[in-house]
Length: 305
Image (spheres, rainbow, N blue to C red):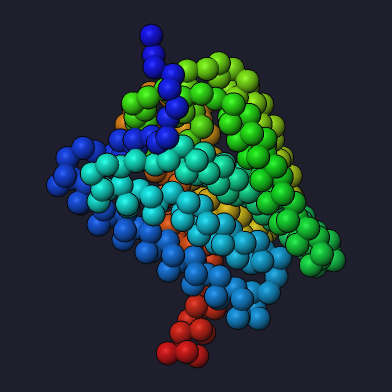
């Protein structure tokens, strides 16, 4: 039978046990993290100081950059620490705190992507009323609502997870703490926590995904009603960056939480994609595909350099 004495810490086995590979991974993920910080801080700064970008679309983009900074900082520093450490331990409290903030920041990004899809729908379907519909108070309220719903969802899940009991010699076949990774380590019944996670994921993440699909269905109908080819191309180009960001986030995040927990390489890749790679790519997606952002960056560089 499994020993049920009190557990004080977990061991994060990470991505590799080979010291040379760990050193290479440390350099790689340190570079990714620095690029994430620089890219998102640059986008935040550009949106803040350039008056041409003081619109609802770029207000939400600035919030997405701030969120990517938070989401990446929840996971990557601990990953870097463990790549240099021999013990690779994390306290139970620290692990549950990481679970909470991964869930909260990921949930907020899910809500924010749905809000940004609605913003694009209003901009394309009602361009003359856009500034009236997406006024400042509504935009701020939608952002605060996104944070509030995600933190409430995370709080409910973590409060249920606090009732779990863990056994000794606990090794997590992962580089971060995620709720599904803790279930095989529990000596107690996980059904309540699993059901809560399943319900919240269905309502929160699938709910937001359906809202995004509905917004783009309406956008598609609007674009098909535009007679000129140039008008259709311009309307679609305003959505391409957001569609790419949605694909990266949901393509990896949903697959990770739908997969059975096994510590497989595919599971680790999906987790790396949404928690490490996507926060780095979002600034590139929105800057490389957006003429207004590129022009704003050039104006800022000419002014301050």
